[in-house]
Amino acid sequence: MASAAALSAGIAGTAEAAPRTLTYNSSGAGEFQAAVDQGAQVWNNSVVNVRLVKTTGAANITVTVDNQWPRAYVSSLGRGRWVMGRQAVNEGHDTVRISSHEFGHLLGLPDRRTGLCTDLMSGASAGTSCKNPNPNTREKAEVEANFRTAATVQATTFVDAA
Image 1 (cartoon, helix red, strand yellow):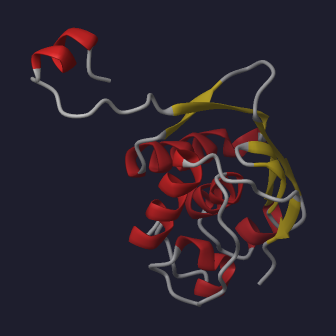
Image 2: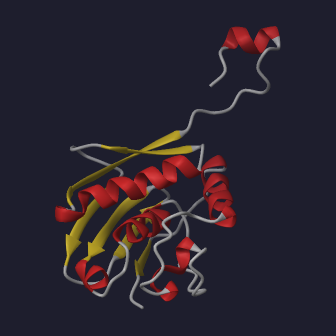
Image 3: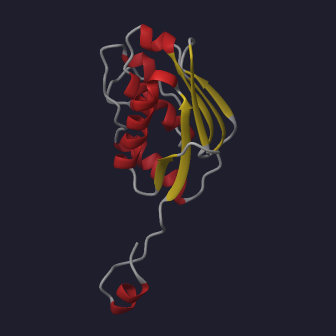
């Protein structure tokens, strides 16, 4: 963020708002905590106006694990929980891609079952050979817009079965 002195001196351009910080707690994600952290880092490297920060206490986003399919429960933009489902992992889906995809739901993105590996939100429809955890240009822009305008996101459940 540009300092007030730099702005008044005309050194920095227009001031940008500080990124919105969303905390996530993955203590319930079992053996997938590293993949959850990598998924959060993918988003931190992809967008500028939202940051996912790990915590062990109360959080905007809670991540757990079970033996079903991955799914996200979005209560509002940047708030809710998601589940790393072992069923998808056991079928060969990439854990970091799953993590990035599920975080994408909490960042306001819907499923778009295009079947394209380049589309993060295509989810399982891209097949088990797809290892791409990165959002495409459109997905990045949509998240940036969501947090620039504080978009309203309806409470939604996303179940990412193939």
